[in-house]
Image 1 (cartoon, rainbow, N blue to C red):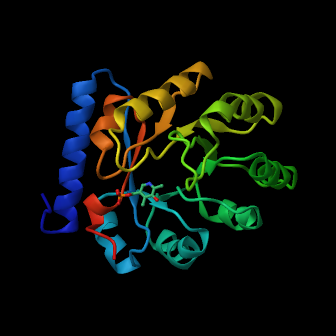
Image 2: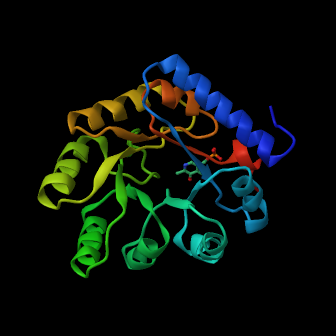
Length: 222
Ligand SMILES: *Cc1c(COP(=O)(O)O)cnc(C)c1O
């Protein structure tokens, strides 16, 4: 499956996304987020040159070291934060990222509200749900998700557009994706950030609007 160069890998992933979308039916789009964590600018540029514009990073510090220079040179780049966000990094994150996928606790919501109160425009947000209720994973627990989402939307007026999850590693992911879709739908949220290199087709089948794909595009990480 491993195509020879970045451009071919991108074409192959895009073709697989298109096939999964066709199988799902309907016209809802699927955004490909190219996850470039641990990859150098030299490895990222070929994908930009092949036409990819939307990228994901999981660490604020790492993104700060790579993306301002790339954004200065390449038009139309969009950067998504897909990893945990510490409250003391919120201001920096808001200067770097166009979308944040990992809103998962009231303290982080408070920090975002404080930034907004200081005149900083907030980006689109996803609430991360710990859909498998795993001790080691971030995200609001499934049984607390409804209350937290409700608060984000109606009490705090945060620009939440959807939900994000990472299902348990060694299980069939479909039922977890389906559960996330059900929670989102109960709150009128249409955007679902779910699916990685190993399971993005299954995620699209369950309604993913954003897939986060790293190794299938860049090759394995060290
Ligand atoms: C690393 C990462 C991905 C991409 O994983 P691959 O298996 O390399 O596609 C997606 N989502 C999150 C939150 C990640 O940290």
